[in-house]
Image (cartoon, rainbow, N blue to C red; front, side):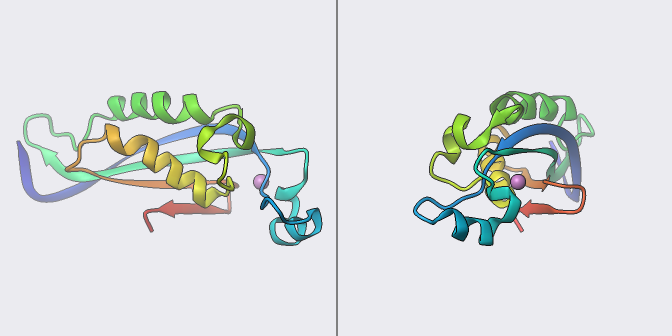
Length: 140
Ligand code: NI
């Protein structure tokens, strides 16, 4: 049973490492370098990504939970970290075969990996830090 009106957010923080290279196929190395800077260097490089998965919804009257954070943690491990952690995003992850692995696109991919596993009455938000100072949010 859901109580009416009290919308609360629960948030799980996770961490993963991954390598990537930002580039647009068909552009020269110079065009890519001027757009993507060091993130376009041909031999890839890594980032320490910090991930926040936020779920919002009504508090369940029986449990007092919006969502069991242990379950959320398990879902993130299974569907996101297994897929991305210690991977070369360009080479190892199907979702980035034809998609530039920018923080923006990674956040959307993470959202779409998790969405089918979260109750449809709950809203899902992703915040992804590529560096301590640069982060993206989806949906905005
Ligand atoms: Ni980079």
